[in-house]
Structures are given as C-alpha cells and as structure tokens.
Image 1 (tube, one colour):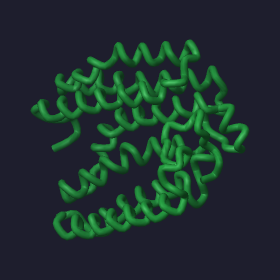
Image 2 (cartoon, helix red, strand yellow; image 1 turned 45 degrees about the horizontal axis):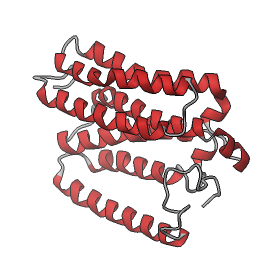
Image 3 (cartoon, helix red, strand yellow; image 1 turned 90 degrees about the horizontal axis):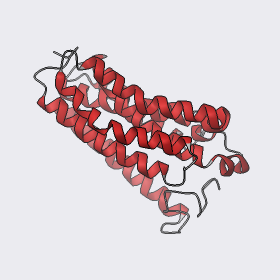
Length: 230
C-alpha cells in the first residue's frame, strides 16, 4: 500500500498481483484481529494465568503486528528487524507458556531466541536483496544502513548464533543437538549471501526455518527435562 513492494521484488504477491484490493486487505485484517481477540477471551477463561499477564503479552504482540507496516510503519524506519525479532519468538513463546503454565517466567525467552533469530534472518535476507528498491521508495531498513558487508555479517550471526545456543544447552539436554542437523544448509545459505546470490535467498532461508523448527520441536519433545524449566 505504501508503494515499497513491486512485481519484480515482492515475495508476497497478494497486492502486487491484485489478488486482493487494498480495501479487501484492510477488511481481512480487521476480521482476523477480531477473531484473534475472541480467541484471547476464550483462552483467558480457560487459563489459570492472571488476566493482566495474558493481556499484557497478547496486546503487546497485537500492537506490534499492526505497527510493523501500519500506523508508524516501523518496518520503514529501520525498526522492523527489532520488532520481528521480539514478536516472532519471545512474545509468542511467552504468551503460550503463560497461558498453559499459568505463571510468568523469563526462562522460556531463552528457548525462543534461536527460532526468533532464524526467522529474523528471513526478513534480513529479503531486505538485503531489496536494498535498492527500498532506498528508491524512501524506506529505511537495517540492511540499507549496514551496507553489503555489514548485512552479510548480521545475516551470518542470525544464522549461526542459534546453533551455538543449542550447543550450550545440549550440555544438560543432549537432544537439543538435534537442530544441528540443519547446519550444512546454514553454511550453504551464508555462501549464497557472500556470493551475492540473493534473488531466492529469503525463500531458501524460510525453508531452513521450517526444518530448523521441526527438529527443535522434536528435540524438546524427546528431552527428559529442559534447563531452567521446572
């Protein structure tokens, strides 16, 4: 809607291919927000957690999802990366934990970070690829501020730090080594970025994210206990 995405660069084809009109997207968004709030009310009635704790996390995430491109449009002022890193990881995981465990606990935030960083790598790959289009449209992203070299370093950190975290956690729960099966794919993606082959890098990073997440879930299920959680 802001004219940042184009038919040649956008991965989301909904608007650029006119599958939906801008008004239809707005109406769909309003419907989904309404359904989400209804789901929150139902969950709040079932959960043993305090209402204010659930509401704090839920509406914090809800606001973030809107402010990413709507309202202030944090995506376009170099804050989108931070928002995605916080929302698509710590906020989602904390909300799920509070709703099920009935209490606030910072420990799950550590377990959210590997997948959050991996998810942020998808966005960063997209922004690195679209640097020129974003600059032309007046949008400011972290990839634009960092430049090619800085973007490559950040992408590598987002890919590989999660594996280091798993290696540390595996000292007390060996099943958490399971996501390291995807490490060769991560090296391949880093090489693609280094060589400037960015056209399909967001999609390839998203594919890694799927397998990474599945192995992570399997590791958590198989582990007898998780460090820091009781």
